Length: 297
Length: 340
Image (cartoon, rainbow over all chains, first blue to last red; front, top):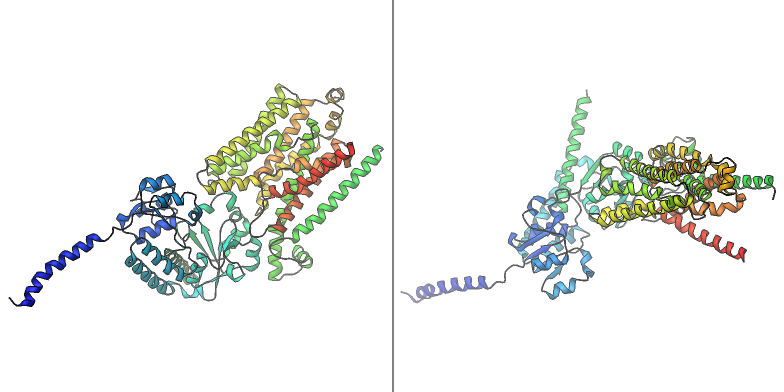
């Protein structure tokens, strides 16, 4: 037997053993408990199924979550510290309110890391924060795939939009209590991604704020994006939506409805909301064309 | 001071209140998120200009600002006259619509509707529930008056009823399933005229008109009662009938207002106090003046909140208390100095 062949014969099994051993030596992926709806969506899309110990109850509600069916396969939690300690995760995904949570040091003393997904104000932020979270939970490759897929879907979005609708048109996001969204909000990103101008930011609104009914009457946006978030349906908070003047404006303008399960998170799932709204626009556009074709000679 | 001079002074006071109300009403039509000049206001009101901008101004003034203005007048007048009537009936300066538990019960009815999500079934269910609850409270008070007939029994029953309704409202807030529901209940309880339309005005107006008419018609009986129960009886006043009329009038007017705007406190308490001396301590004269004063105070509060509210609306109940409380405090101090 030549020396090289002998070496190969000896080294190959050794290398195989080393590879297996090194694979075994890799630390297991950290286990996760997510306590917030938007973090739940990130966990479902980025983590391996075995990593997830529990998701918030909200993510199991089909009125609030597009991932309700998948979320129902995991135990639910209401975000209480006792529940988190009992589940013994390595990481707890939490909302920004947890920055100053009095029990945060106690959880960290028990070896539970509190990870708060950063707030995104632009699509670039979303790319970076998706990757950041994937790194935190030990799934960097999955993060890269997700970001790449997001870039592709974002690039395809103009192609599925009916072009006549968006050209130089503006859109006003309006909640039933008069709330609106200016620049630096994910709604602004959503409206711009669809190719519209955000009317609230054009009139100077920065961040979340209000748009009075008088302003809506006076300034008359081309399109309305109406929120149907579950939390906006409460009686006292939805007084504006019952006003006859607003009803008349909504009836006279093209309007899109943002269902409660879409559009409440400033993360990569925003693309799903954009695609959903683009489909709605397509649908209303084709309906309008059909109606026109019937009346045309 | 002679009776004629007192009547003349009351007339002057009412004329001043009416004039102030008209001026505030015009100011109220000018104030809002969209700036409208006096000339534009006149053009829009009389459709003098048919431009697109004038048409939009017309919608803002006639359909957004006018119902709000009229509702402020109607609700303020109800609270003012009800406070004056109750203070006259119970001969107690602390009496106000809230004291009888009518406002609290109307609020409780609305809160039950909010808590169980019944407002999703029909948007009219909440005001109807509030009015039904106010009516139930009225029936209970009626029964107490029928059984015992004394003013003290009425006050004590009203306080008990009010406490019970407040406790049940707190329980609903305590057990609310999520923060959104808590916020909704609390917001509603703070009272607001924002985004109200002519539909809301139409809903409460018949009950308010009936209630205010009943209260205003009690004037001469209240004058007699101010001499004492025995003297009033000798003058042919049936106390239980007067009590029933004022309870029903308060329940109808205040219950209907609470149903539409939420709970607005302080107006019924503070307005009769501010005006009592100016009308020569006559309960009958105080009724109409308090109606005007209540409307004026509520309209002033609504204008103030529109001027100071930025992105977050300040609730009307908060502003009435903020405006009314210092006035009330000053009045108490002034009386104290006069007594010394």
